[in-house]
Amino acid sequence: MKKNVIISLADSNYFELLNELVDSIKRFKQSDNTAICILDGGLTDDQIKILKPKVDEIKSSDWDIKISQFKTMGKKWLKSLITRAFLTEYFPNYEKYLWIDADAWVNSWEAVELYFKGCENNKLCISTNADRAYGGLRVGWFFGSFARVKSQNYKHAKSSGFSEKVAREVALRPHLNAGVFALKSSAPHWKVWRKNLEDSLKSGKVWGSDQIALNITIYHNNLPVEILPAYCNWTHISGMKYDEDRKTFVEPYLPNHEIGIIHFAGKHNNEIRNNKKTLSKIECLNGKIIEKNLRFNNE
Image (tube, rainbow, N blue to C red):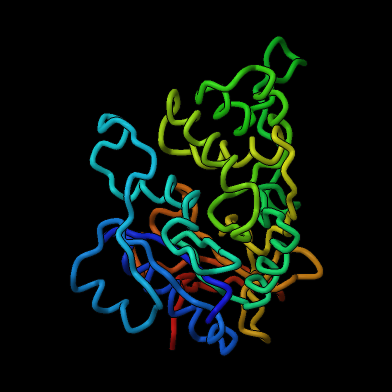
């Protein structure tokens, strides 16, 4: 019986990305001992047939917290923002759970190992949106020399109905990216996260609700966390470089560590997500600029 599992969810529009994620996992020999489970958020029958031989289980996802149809607007893929707090309910027979968004792919198995190792001792293992290559805080300037910090955590906490006290507690902490995370089945985070998520959905939008609920679980409820380097969940796509000698994507600064998981999060990556043939300009370590497809290619 496999103890570790990697889980993702997609609808029919994200099928190609999900299929690439699965292929990027299975090309590593180490994946033989890791289960892959898929939550169906609106896949077609033909798409499920393609996935079935590659994965251990496929289950239909549900709205695990009841919310109004006005908030969902028929977008079934929004289930993933709620469902990932309930992974142990869908697939109860595993010890360690690693969630990876469908618009990401595994470039180096080291990152997978770090996530599973980091969730030991009932810690949440996760990466943040803060890194030396990502840029600094966003601020709004007024009255000449005064600045107001534009904090994602603060904005989402307030829009989701959390108190000013809670919003300020999380405001300047590194934003934890729920697109990739690992937790043990026995971790206390699941219950607290679900409660915070339910509270968030009462006042806030579905989009972003899971992440602010998870950030509050760590920074307000003080549950244990292991924060991994950004290369374990790399979202600053335009900032990475390519190592032609090793034929792999790396951080832009020394020591140019190999990127573990490449994650096409954000509107600025729409073209890459929507068009598999998109070529992007990327700088090599020797300074040369090349055009390269950044999607996973199994060839």
